[in-house]
Length: 117
Image (cartoon, rainbow, N blue to C red; front, side, top):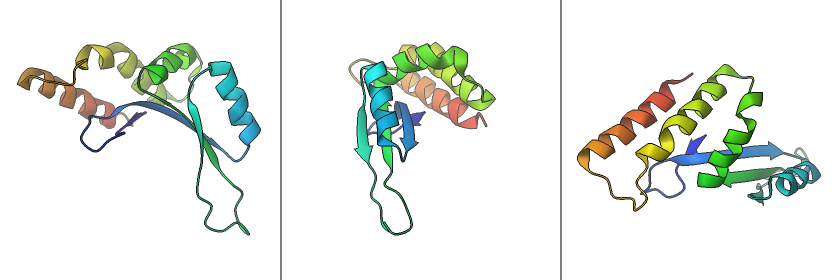
């Protein structure tokens, strides 16, 4: 749920859904109203179907997590989603500049997020 989009950035919220059924992902994209669908490289077309991913990033991902949070079943994903909803926005600077204390809090948040298994 946290992913680095650029190598020099902190990880940010990301929701992705992978499927070999493009129609399903297009349906989800229409219902959500945001996001993008990308096609994954198929290295062996004789053995594998084409695969697609629907991706939501940053604020769009946070808003989506708010919507689906009550329906999450897997405990580790529910805990991670709750952590993002409760802490991510308050720990993220809008201009990307962090004081030492803010940086430490952001790193602690990331370590807490990763430690949820």
